[in-house]
Length: 443
Image (cartoon, rainbow, N blue to C red):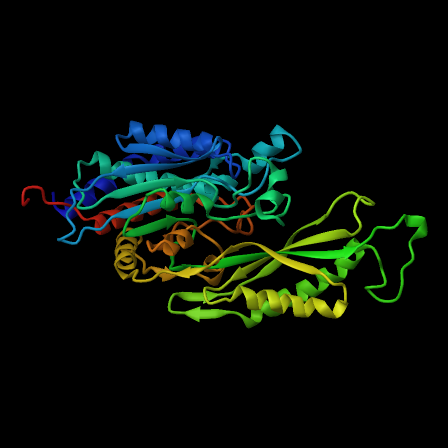
């Protein structure tokens, strides 16, 4: 089968699967998908792959969290240019279970379609793109196309956060970790690679406005502990200045003002331009909490959890020292501990995958493939986990209707069905290009 014939078969198959794509989005989008509790989604994905005739296996992260790996084997022809490829997307969606009941949970985390748009927090991040990779893989598998090299389609857990089974264990895990905040982004993709899923390239499917992300930011998270003691209110005596106030929470308010000022300067002074775009690293307070009930320890602490995004060239120790210098004039003897760190990466030697994606995007959309905006590359995505492991990874995905939903993670950002179908085709053609279509008669 020629490459052109293979592409035509795949495109026709995806067009015929339009309703199947919508149905699968709604099916997966209405399953439980909290970070660390994605096994319902994973089981459904594994079952779907098996019914599609694609070999599927599970990686067990915990009793409620799994990765799923689908494999379409190639014939092993690297001499004529075939290369293996991972199509990756994540199953979990950020946030915990709403306290307001089932109806609120459905409104915040459910999935539905209306007037050609797919709605749902969990679809935009990231199950709509997962569905695109699944439909693309099935189109290749059912078209009787022999690939030169292996194609993997992976649904990973714990991309947005990797909490322990018991939230009370977070402190024990890191020694200084938070109660509820985001931790260990990309844990599932790291687990995927560490447990043997390797390839030449990885294409990470995430919303990206039909642009390509060739780099992603890292992060550094700090716990800033403000000491003091909480007196009995009638006996409270506030002295002179910030340090004269014994209350650690009121002291912490002044620290937070300094951190916000630091974050504004950090964002403007640490922007980093490179061939693939521009990083604009940001920082903010993520969580605030006490060290325990009042009057139970010799020192009462207010813990401030501070999330700092990193350019690939950032030096964590210098950043910690900068934060310490800015806080020190308050004379509060704050303790600063890092509890979560991941480097950011720029994809190396990505030209073959980048060029294949450009060709596919042009063929399907008719447009030139642009580089992603600073907002898209200044966040963590699973491409970092692959690039860290030496698997060249870049990202691609559809736009969201930002005028209807606002912001990024945490908002309901609808995706056009037409755009998701186009994304599926681009992913499929990229896979054919990278893995290569084998000429079995010539062999």
